[in-house]
Length: 309
Image (cartoon, rainbow, N blue to C red; front, side):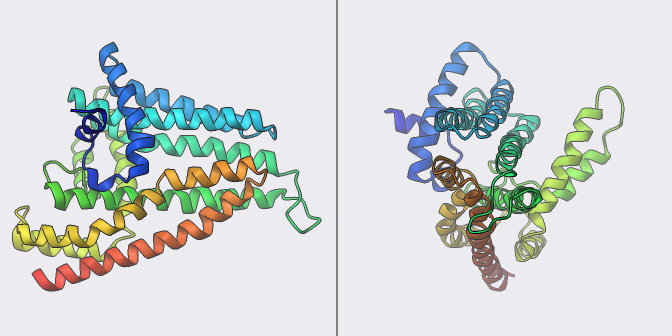
């Protein structure tokens, strides 16, 4: 097997990865994963290193010197390679843990919190384009809307739709499609004692995150409820194939909503000295992509629901 074949073997599915992700993100991540495997490093350790490196990148975006910004870009790319490596390493070593999955999802939020923080600090004393007014509080409001409202929902739905596609493509045993109800039930069975409190706490936050995903996909929730009432987990292969046929063209859009596209725009806006453009892009263009993706996916779910239930 050549390098790319080895990389593909560590992926959940090639259908959820585009050429950019395969060659620019996953392949370097795989090489790091091989190194970590040889060194005996646990995937959770790799995730923690990714969080630290990505958070540190934000500080370099505070400076208006391009050389400092380039260091920050390099750190963010490095952090993303580690973020890819942890999942690949977990599959290579069969060291998959729920806390690893949760930290992996938490990873990008930490990166971008510090990126938004330092970009707002950088811009607050600058003037809004074409006006004589300083950004001041307005850049903080724009950054908060972009980061807390738009970014979170975009990444959450992109991740959720990929897991849904894998559920129908690979089946429930190989997919990672959890429901907030099942997570809450597991959480309720745990106690606030010395051995279970941490597990119970992170299940609480994981249930909230999953519920935020489910809140965006009404038709999908109804479809799954009716399909499980009729078929249980043994969905007909024809149904699975038809769902994947409709869902497959949306996978590139889920990649746009997560990391690669937003980081390209982030780097360009910082390099050109107009970081505020990134906030506007995230609040407008990526929001339109999110609305379109949800609309298309909900139509697929409605069609399947009408045909099979």
